[in-house]
Length: 422
Image (tube, rainbow, N blue to C red; front, side, top):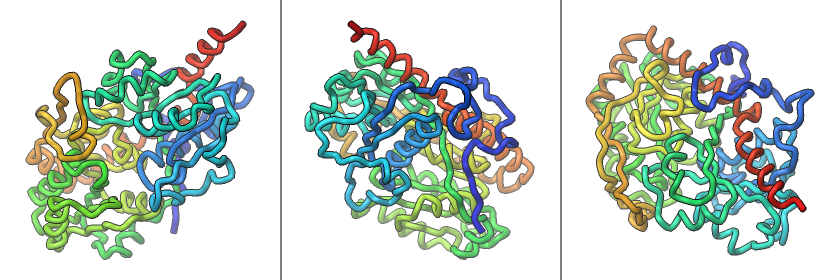
């Protein structure tokens, strides 16, 4: 049985308005184009990104495309080829145009790519940037940006940052204006929890924890070792608790990841899923859990946390960086941490030069294990936190699909147009 989960569209999930810094007046309900109002953006938009890709950047790009369409904005798409990770989601295929085009149909372009990839398009397709308002939506997780990003960001007219943490990291360090862009999520239909548990042989009455990471994003940053340690410290090999550990990676895993997975597979109460799944199937796994665990050391946004909250799952997560846009003690269990210098062999960090040493969070694993035990022992607390998480996420999602997040884009575009008026 499949449930439809269009995020932020259920009236019972939309009752609470969060008092957050980005809470402008509502432009509409988010149920399609706003009626009897001027369109959110009175112009068309080209979106360049991993539109069909099976990765977080692809999910984020599709969310922007859907929000533009919901608000009646004409859209043209360039789907950047990512090899085997492309062509996994073709819902917007009818809007694709050829990458080889010398020009783009609309005067505004959103590059839903990280900074180096976006700057490479400027060098390869200069015609796209002629008399065009160009926006980049980069994702970054540390409190210092790579120094070589800054002149690249300056080539764009606007930088949209998906969290306040990222906005603070970039603001003032590049000359391009930086504005907060609070992405929401729209979930696909997913399979009910009982069916998923049966499919992957997990007891129906077990307390199930879901954790995931992408090996390409840096194993130290995502910290699956911390997640595993916290779960085992809380429950050991008890059959009353179960961990689902989901991994995405296109590369041969490094030795630390191989050792971690071998240890996890040796445990009778841990299920490791290391093959790529459709997005809806991943949502089914999250929905089958009683709690979501993410002891990350840094997140630019924390899309997985936001998805889990949208599904009404209580979250145990490091109380640091991008997730704090929507996580607090009323709707989740933030884990204590200490700030430490970044130590990681990931290629992005090894090549990074920053003006100041980058720092991230070292989560308190013992504190996280206590939070997991607390959730396992208190179903009422799970329900309470899950409902508050759902309400918080639904409010954010509703406002995103109503077009509120595009207001800074519209204001900046209008200034750009006035400056070019005869």
